Length: 93
Image (cartoon, rainbow, N blue to C red; front, side, top):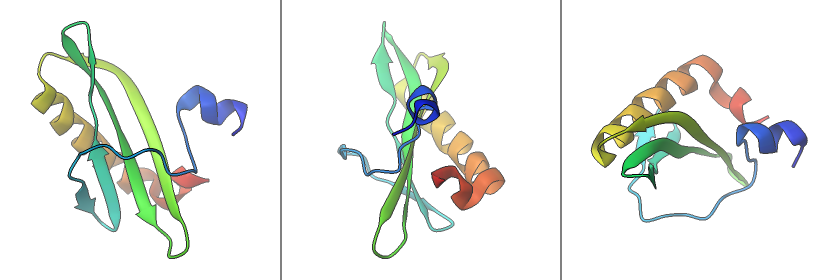
């Protein structure tokens, strides 16, 4: 994985899966996975897409902290949908 991939949290490899029910959006699976941090929740998650013989994953963590896990999940889903609409499959390469 290259320097920028590590710096910005991009991953072409499948990451470990958590017990999260994905949201299907336009052929992409969105996994909201907020990270508990100091009594709050950091917005984080994965966007995955199946390309037949390969599953690509884009992992991201934002600087935003919210007081509720549900709010962090909702925010992540909305941001992921916007990111998908803006970048499409380019997020994987």
